Amino acid sequence: MAALKMSSVLFALSLLIVARSEEDSNLHFINVQPGGERHLLSRYLGPFECTFSYVAQGGTNEQWSFDLTADHDGKVYTCSIGRPSGTSYLVFSEFKVEVHGADLLDAEIYKNGGEKLSREEYELDKDSNSVSSAPDGFESQVTRIHVLAKGVKTEL
Image: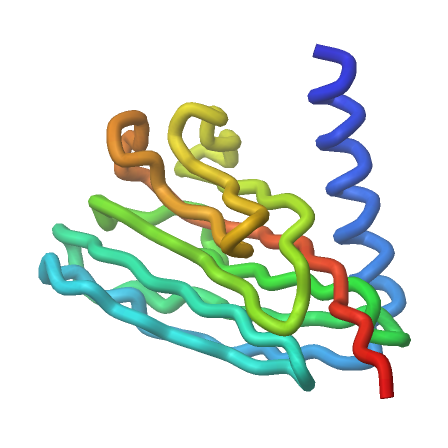
């Protein structure tokens, strides 16, 4: 339990460090659409790419933010996707966020009411640099996804 709390604190601290020291930001607004079809959206910030795919039903289109940030030297990136109001009326059957050009470190996912999704509701796969809804445990609510990644060092 203490390790879980420490991990959460370190993740939040990393997000603050990137937000406070960011030189680059790539904020976009997207329409998250119901209809039961798979949607795929990608954003780039330098060598960093973040891709969000989802299937949702119910309600109407919702405006969400899709924000990429980097610290001043490109060592830490964040990808944040979410409903600015913190409430979504859509029912998600699945979601996935993948990063390229950086190594996935951690993710935090929230549902209505500002509650974090339980660990049983999503899968964090560092080998494939992705976080996605768990096939059997996901309870269909997502309002915000934060992904933290470490820049990949390239040698000349």
